Length: 577
Image 1 (spheres, rainbow, N blue to C red):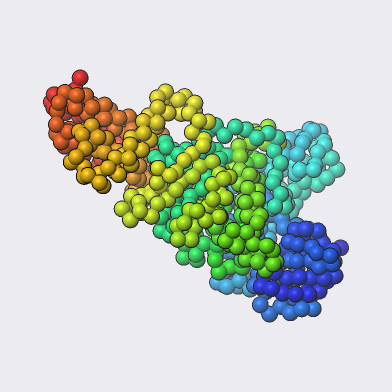
Image 2: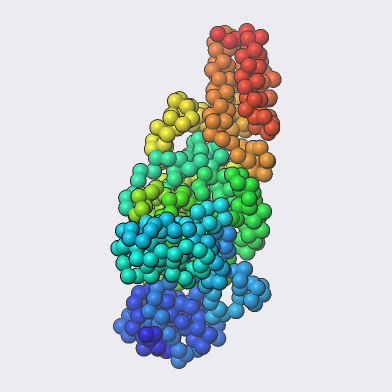
């Protein structure tokens, strides 16, 4: 039974109520308009509530109702292709009802409760089932949406239906309990699994600098920090489009309205490279822009990761993009200050690191309750003020995640994209995935990666000398190192996200390109030993042909031709061994 109280105090989105005795994180309805809020603090007989909507016009004495339930997500068929706000209200439905501006106090179910779905049973009467086990299949987009036994339900299948049903209809009776196609799940609680598995399978993205130098694994965690205009959103869109995850959850958490508009308008037009269908058919979008209520921003990341875990439990590989966790942290800071909590570094709450850890910890590759493998890979964009990577959100994120893709404003100014700095970025999964690369790409792939990083590091050292004495003062071998590093940067690391061919590079092709650059290096060093001038080596026509190969329609055929041409030109130069 709902408990009723009254508003005692209002401070922005934070409301203090008296007369109710809720539990932490219960959802409450505030004021005459029944604004949705969540209990975040209980002090004696006073209950502190963060309201997910604008509180202007509220006054002390208005009614507060405790629903007795936490903030939950509706999970079931119909999530894919949807666009929600931070508390899972479907924005297209609200648009149809009230136009471009959402009125306060409006609630709408996360799933369509009228639509009927074709339910195909996968168990029969008398079968014994456990929580998480699939009892039936529903076609959703190109996927088989698995209807699972809810957690807390176990026993014998007493009834099982077949046909078209809504998400509210009973499709099975297990152990005396009704099972529907829809589940409710508290967003702040991680969904259970049987075992956590080692993150030793890479998430293939088709982006050369990410896959080869700084790989992310399925079930891994990564961060993309960078200043304004460095390419965080484009990088996340590339990951969404090209990574070999089956489901994408994209959370626009507190970003500017124009950036979120771009995502909302481009994603439906993006073509899924696997199926040729719109990418939205395997995507869930959560849009919570910077002008929307600050409290809902804090809830949006939990709503998104709960949906990701739900598809993980079906055995899918899910990638979750959070853009950006800085805005989420700023929402926490604002709520914390209104609660008059002791501020930590730069005004952020003292529990900032704990909340970030709690969020990223829900990533992982797991064995599900049904015995299948699924994963949630989390990539969080971080927007540090002024591009300062020493600020608290970036630093706390770096202590948690295993992959750091550092976007660099200087690279952006030089029109080098993706503007990921290869000297400051890192991946702690490299050792985990080396064996996978040896088996699936090439035996010497890890060694080739190591050689590439060594050349780029030596270039950075030599550039300091060049600034002091000029490049002409360097010995020929060091001049050649600078040129090889330039080839790696311009041919391999630079990638055009908007070019139809260069936007995606398969792993085998990435290996071939690096192998050819190393071959050019090895033949050049032999030519130097034969006292051939470094300028003649650098000016070989094959080098320029290689720089254009990534834009050719038959890239792989062109690379084979380049290897033959390279050997021929070095022979003519007289320097090949």
